[in-house]
Length: 366
Image (tube, rainbow, N blue to C red):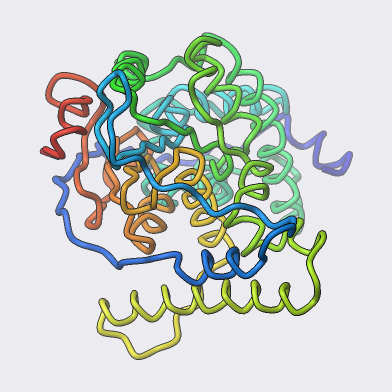
């Protein structure tokens, strides 16, 4: 932000504010989703042959129960933001207020109703939320129109810095019941991975929140971040990280061809289910989420169809649908009004009438 912009940030021109609206939580409508298999990927791994330094394909869940009577063919993946912690209610809003104060914007303060109203109107786009808010109350005095974008980015930088501090403090608590739920999962011998790689606020914050579970729990859980995705079988094959080491050019071409065919096959199946004849191309963001889900399934030792994703984001739900991974949504303040038609269930939290291990084991989603 320029010196003129910084100086201008100390005062705001007040305008008439519109009243916030109250959010309501709609009921979920479960539906089925597209199927997906990894046969071409496994074939490429077999083609590597003895002595090749190619990643081993993921193991399937064991059909026999371990000593603590874990159910067969079941793995669990948890998102962080919205699932382990309601980052949007106890982190984002407060971090924005810290950012406003650090920039001298004494006229800006987001209460929970104001924040919820902005989230709804901007569909969670934080740049848009800021634009709507300052259009409503007035932009900093003397701020040139051409510098509004720069000003917004400066607020977001300060907000992220504040959120990083919040994530490691008691100001950002874990969701009620999530620790007991995880203890019950581990007690049943269900393999568990936490997905820290595609949260809206970055992996550093996601890992910091996961650490709140304590060293004893974390020692029994796999945290899947960017490095873990790249080192997974699917990550190396599809993302191309480390694939060429020790392989001849022909094998690399075969592996890449298999990966490409797998992605196209998934697209065709989704298109068929949706009754579409158009070519479907996944966005880069969607590809990253799918890679994280597939890597997570490898680390818990299950095929994707035998994993359950507990999601707090629309991106996770849509990616799970594309690869036929069962998905349960735990609502947060950010998703209070969102609809998740492809989820097996939509719940408000953990325990009692919401998500419990007994429901997970019996697949009694509602």
